[in-house]
Length: 268
Image 1 (cartoon, helix red, strand yellow):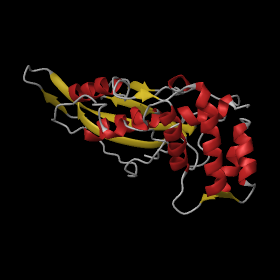
Image 2 (cartoon, one colour; image 1 turned 135 degrees about the vertical axis):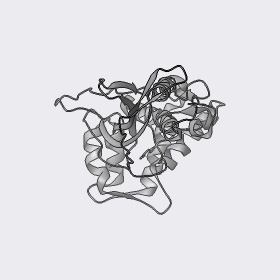
Image 3 (cartoon, one colour; image 1 turned 180 degrees about the vertical axis):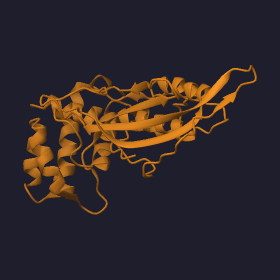
Image 4 (tube, rainbow, N blue to C red; image 1 turned 90 degrees about the vertical axis):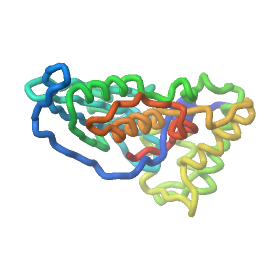
């Protein structure tokens, strides 16, 4: 049976689920400085956490539909008065900032930006913690190497059946959409997805979970033991959101629910 390598990669390496759904938040700093106990000046700086996304495994830049799993990369910028911006990023097993498609367009688009201010020493500690913030170790990154190839066709069939039963599209039949996915014709499929709607209570996330649960049961593994790029991104955003000026920056703990089970659809 022919199974599109593209479609399998899409299913196994894409990400998703919603975070807290809050709107972009911004605050501005005064540029004031404080003095540490050693008499060293500790200027007030600003930090910006940016969420960058693209359609998972699409070779075209940007996001097309929230129905489709995204790949999420995050960036943490640190800016101090009179100094250049110090940028760190987490590609989360995928696309790096600035990479372009065949048309020269930057793949990743910014979907969320949150800012804060604080003493430089604290924000440097936050950026250092961010550099080591991922779900790796507590759970495994879900990739083709994680699963037995002998069960890959079962995964594709389960997802295809779920789509056929629960998705309705106005510009094409669901079977036509499934065929495009199976053939790796991602651009054509993404033209159709915005015209689709789910049956009550259904979602792509649920279908992927059902398919992977079935597959992993066959390999004596459980879905909670895996994460995808969006789990990493959600953990990194939680680190940033938890920062409070004057408080000690605590390293990420990957042994949390955020890292347990693939987060297929992520709209922070």
